[in-house]
Image (tube, rainbow, N blue to C red; front, side, top):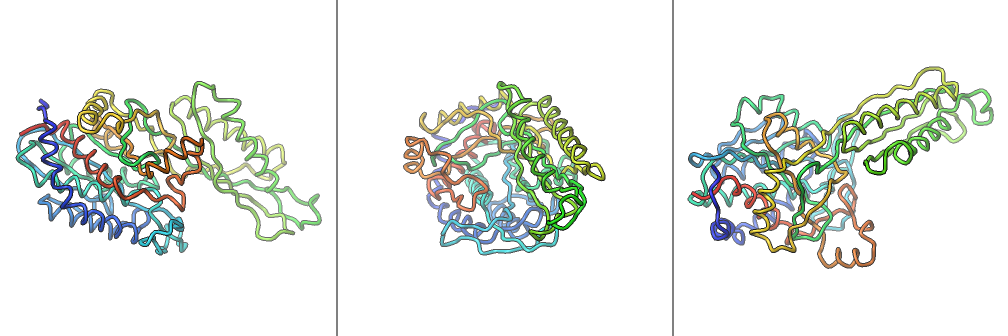
Length: 424
């Protein structure tokens, strides 16, 4: 049974934050300057494992290739899993930070790409190392088992499932709850969440359209895949505007359109890569079917010599916060943070594989957001109706303000964990 943890007990645990902050700031900057692509997070995993070992955890590395799992058994009580993701993105950073990434790496396709932490996973690692350390230093205040998990490959939807496939459920204790958080645009120092769907399901697809190449001066000899692809892209936009009810939600984004190598040559084929976000299984099924229908119809209308190839690239599940567990965390946040720092937010169209853990273990999971924007800049942008102009996750300019984002994320993990671990 959960025991009450007083605000005084929570404050006692967090009282060592000041001493720990310089180390966490250095860790964050180190990881930020040395990012690693999905499923290649060897160095980052080593730093996370070292942090856990120094704090007295049993540490297992190489789970799902580069994943790290820590265990701190502190008497009889609930088991709480805290999760952080570790991977960076193939994006060239343009923040101007003194510790900005200059790293390049070889991706899964053998291409050399720039690499940078433009989603905030470097902050997530520092948060979890900080929370795990503070809770280890104050074991007299709580009882139970703490299980920090550093996950690889979130950006490619590989990592959570890779850890599960590598025996996560058999090799480690079943948690009573799985908790996670993400830095997002929002005033630094704030936390936001809600029960129910919190991040969308996502499906990424590659579409290859086939035509017949010819000289640019003789289009009559061709079946032009560029025109075919352009028609597909435009028609895809009607799925959301004309086939999805206004009371539902869906996003269809074409992120890649590739065709040809020279301006006076009509190519043989064209590639479209797109992404779909949905919050309802029925809507998802309809949108994916509509994409297939439109792609095949445009190819047939163009007289394509063969049917298009539609290839799934990756898929993220709908992430649903357990209602009772979400309410427990919201109550704990309101008890610790001032009321203006705890926000209610609706579902975000971003996607996560975090939900795989709770689903696999069949236990409640809760995911929430931590603001990372300079509060004054955020307030001015909001007043001017220009919030969309702030750099968002995956932007080359995305850079959470270091303080109080770093402290707030550590505090939130500690407060949330204590909602289960309770008082000793």
